[in-house]
Each structure stands twice: as structure tokens, then as C-alpha cells.
Length: 180
Image (cartoon, rainbow, N blue to C red; front, side):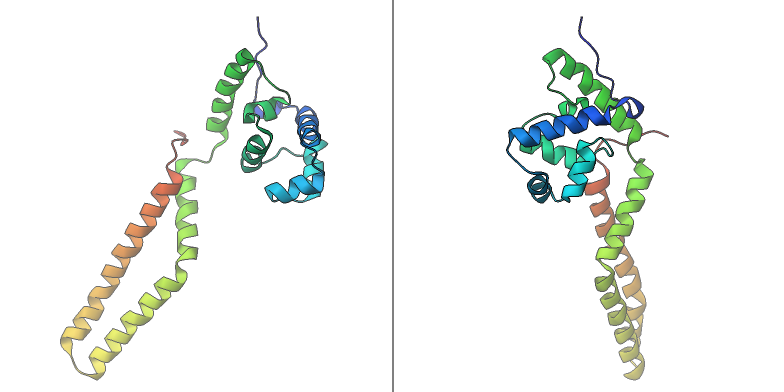
């Protein structure tokens, strides 16, 4: 009978994970500083992981998984896994990710805000353009230009909403949403 590796957050052995990260780093003849440079963190962060003070983020686990050619399950288990242990750990990992992920509503809100921050300059330019068309229509007494200026905010809103929601769909809908 094989041992089941439970990956619930309160049962993860951070010290064991840290020792395994240190072992893998040494096997690849990397210093803490060099590993940090490769994956984009400081050597202090590597030290904190290796001493079991902190758990690496999902992004860092993925980077180390690729670099060291081990599975994320093995990193979270703090050892190389047999096939049976891996299957059990994989299911447990799915459950942990599902339980600890952001809700779909939180993801959508985050990516909407991110898109707005990234496109604020374009929206400001669009607003200045609308005001310019309106002022020119008034100055030149062209009712058609004034009417066009009244329609431009609707067109701008439709553009903003469509492009923003396409961005949100690409980033937020990855199949990990929870039903809360």
C-alpha cells in the first residue's frame, strides 16, 4: 500500500520543501544568488524558501519545476515521488488549487482594473478627441459635427467594453473558477 501525500495548506511541510529545493539547487550547482537571478527573486527569498520560512508562489514553483525537471507535486511534497504517490499528490493538488484559487468574480474584477490601468492613455486621447470634435462643431456651427461628438462616447464605450472583456476572457477564464 502506498502513502498518500496530502497537500492541504496546513499539512505542507515547509522545511521538507525547503530542504528539497536546496538539494535540487545544489545538484544543479547553483548558488542561492544564481538561482534567484534565473527565476527573478533575491537570494534572501531563496534562503527563506530553503529554511521553510515561506512557500514559493505558484509562479516560482512552476519556474523551479521546469528548471530542475521535477513536477510541482514533487516540489510541494519535498521529495521525488513514485508513480503511485504522484497520482495521489496530483489529485490533492487539484483540490488545493480549486479551494485556494481566486473566485471568478475576483479574477474578472482584477483583470478589468488591470486593463483600465494599461489603457488609460488611449481613453484620455479618445476623450480629448471627443471634446475637440464637439468644440469644433460648436465653433464652426456644424450641427452634424456636434451630433457626431454626441455619438462618439457611445462608440468609445462599446470599444472599451469589448476590448476589455476580450482581455478579461483571455486571462480570467482558465477553468479554475470556484462556485461560491
